[in-house]
Amino acid sequence: MVSDDVRRRVLSVACILGFFVAWEIVCLSLHISDIVLPRPSQIMMTLWMRFPAIWPHAVQTLYTTVVGFAFGILIGVVLGILIGSSRLAYDAGYPLLVGFSSIPKVAVVPIFVLWFGAGTIPAVLTAMITCLFPIVVNVATGLATTEPELQDVMRTLRATKWEILWNIGMPRTMPYFFASLKVAVTLAFVGAVISETVASNRGIGNLMMIASASFDVPLVFAGLFILAALGVALYAGFSLIEGRVTGWAIRSDNFCGS
Image (tube, rainbow, N blue to C red; front, side, top):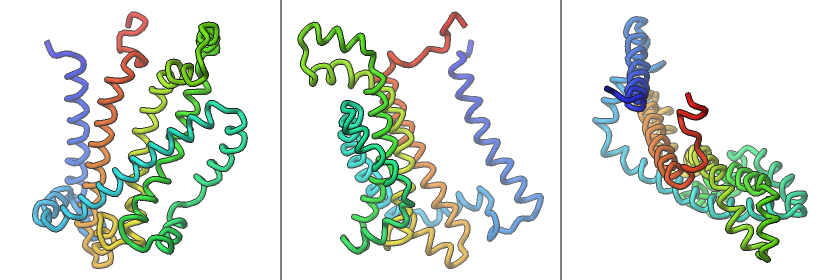
């Protein structure tokens, strides 16, 4: 007998394939020009025929995204711990963080270009600041929602503030932290592509800008497909790690006897 998990996975794959099949049929039946909306078959053919030229741009975008995302995690965790464990840091830092996150990141790219020149560094920095906010907020929220009873028990055992943070606060934060990573990694791709469209001669963002200028719409959509595939791959990777690390915090399907 097929398990519910396998059945659910097959159904999800069937829905995804059905979406692309419907896309293909609509474009063929309505005679939609590829300049307006290319068919999935055209996009896949473009990926296949131009893959040697697309590959270096994909590697560049993946590199800048991963590096910026790594710096975002490092800085986000530190800021989240400071904001979540100190009321003074929360009152002083949180409004600044919210204000900074409200600034359109495309407006920050020219500043990075003035400081570091066009190229990889502005893309890395843009990816970093784009993914920073959800990490900080979720880490701070996880620390703020730590049960006071557990902290009181640790204090009765004469634990230091650092020991309470390490043994109680950080494990309590892990579900929030990994949830933020799955959101932040997609935002990091957005930041990297924004910078590549403005201040770089490499990357998927730059490739899509050149393709759109020459009305090569299938290549534009091919770039979108690559970005989507990279984002899904990283999302799936963090979901797998999340299941390994925070499985104790995830409710099972048969909860409450269902």
